[in-house]
Image (cartoon, rainbow, N blue to C red; front, side, top):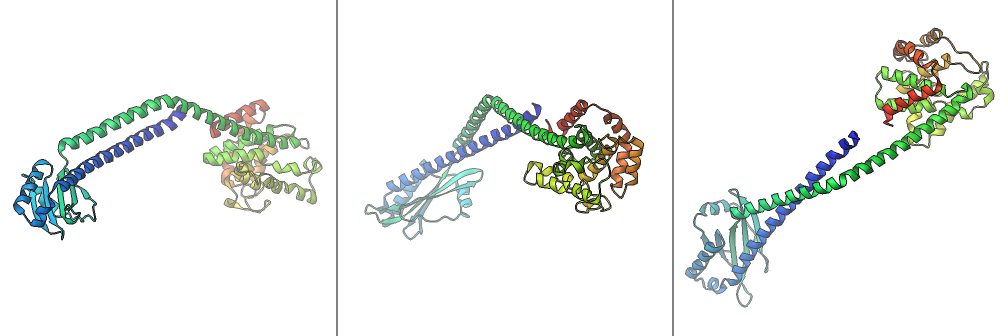
Amino acid sequence: MISIHRYILPRVVIAWLLVSLLVGGVVFWVEIERIDDRAAALALNEAHRFPAELLQQKKLDEIQAHLASLTRQHFAIVELYDANRVVVADRVAEGQEGLERSLQGFAHGFPEKSSITYHRLRIDDKWVLQVLVPLRDRAGKLSGFLEGVYIVDRETEDGIYADIAYTIAFVMLAVLTTTMVLYPLAIALNRNVVRQSKQILRGNLEMMAVLGSAIAKRDSDTHSHNYRVTLYAVALAEAIRLDAEKIRQLISGAFLHDVGKIGIPDGILLKPGKLDDDEFRIMKTHVEVGEDIIRNSEFLSATRDVVACHHEKFDGSGYPRGLAGKAIPAVARVFAIADVFDALTSKRPYKPAMPLVEALKILHDGAGKHFDPSILQVFENIALEQYTTLHAAEEEWLRGRLEKVLGTYYGI
């Protein structure tokens, strides 16, 4: 339960913040656009009211009077251009001389036809809108251009930020409320998905274990071999500090390591004596048969290294590929030791169980030949403890122990 909250809650919080910031940005953009529209409307209105004939007749006194009226009412700076885009007159509101100097570095384009152009600027920590509107006489002829520089006053700007803050707070509250309502549902759905995923995983693992045990039962009359060899292998893998993913590969591979024996005749598989050359050649084919069985399953691909390489030998004399040394996957080198050890110390229909000391001597003699010597040395250090725990254990106990291992590495 804790892990579910740990997984979902940070994502909910991040989504909450992102939505709030996104909405805040949209609100800011909308509010600024409203200011732009207001300034453009003012400029357009004044352009419609401006007597274009004054510009054509060059009546500068009347023009200046009109511009003075505009700077008192709406604009910080007003400039008038003739049709050739030459400044005819300008007016700066009292106290805005510094703004005029700051604007000298900002060029603007002249509008075409009846359009309006405006630029939003940030000057001296103020929002400034530079609006340019074409002027036309009653006949529709272009007489010139009116430029107005509009300053967004501090009160309006503070209002914009207040609106943004209120909107973000509202959105955060709304998202939080929605989250509080939906979060338990999300947790329940996630828990259901996790439960179903674990059930599927458990089903797949159980299917592998059952299939592997069915194969092992053909020559040992018990499921215990597969349980023990898996537990031996995991203990050794932990002792040499294999990572969790490798150990999961080892576990699934241990379940199905001999799956190819399903294609070996009983007369060869259960023969009490030594196999002749032809029989041994047939016996060795169980590796290729096993690889062929798992080839078309993505889930079973994790078993491949063990299924394909558990009969390879460290000196290269193994089969089917004659791999040597570190070319043999680590999980296969670990499994080979566990498999041979359990085979030696277990009773089979065609042989008695070998004492621990004799089994360890055979393994030791195979160091550097059959087995990776460094891994074998680690196994020799833990063999007595593992043998004492697992060798005589009942099948049901071994199954329970294996369930704990699956819980550790698969979370089921």
